[in-house]
Length: 167
Image 1 (cartoon, rainbow, N blue to C red):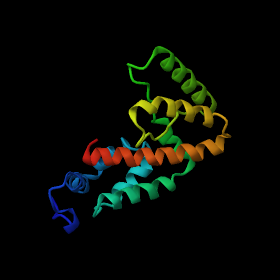
Image 2 (cartoon, one colour):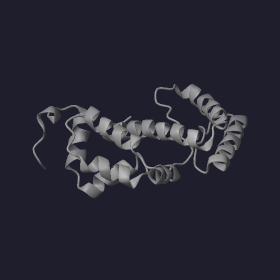
Image 3 (cartoon, rainbow, N blue to C red):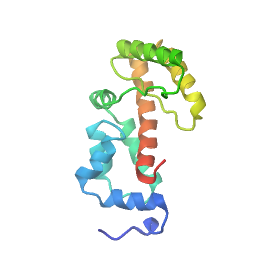
């Protein structure tokens, strides 16, 4: 394993995950990144710029790569997304409403609905998803691609952070 960059030394969990990520073979790093955002070009780009001295530097690089997604790259990433289903304990009416809203969204835009719920309390997530779908169903296709790209970028940040430091 290559020597750690000084900022990476120490016993904190996020630095340990970052050191492992920086030292991983390119294919392994790219696979981890693909689990965060389904664009192969995004994953290759972020992996190619290792080592990252801090988690913030990695997240900044992920953001930059996310802002630079081409139309086909965004399409590839969105095609790999699946809509989250409500918690099994959610009332049947809520599950039905969400299923119908997700189907309407996918029929209109041709991809899964993506939304970052980072920081949203568990009890408010279903309402936030339903409200998001309802409001975004009125978007034009290109406007929705911009919104979906931003939500995907936010999701990638959250997933990458969790992959390196846990929930």
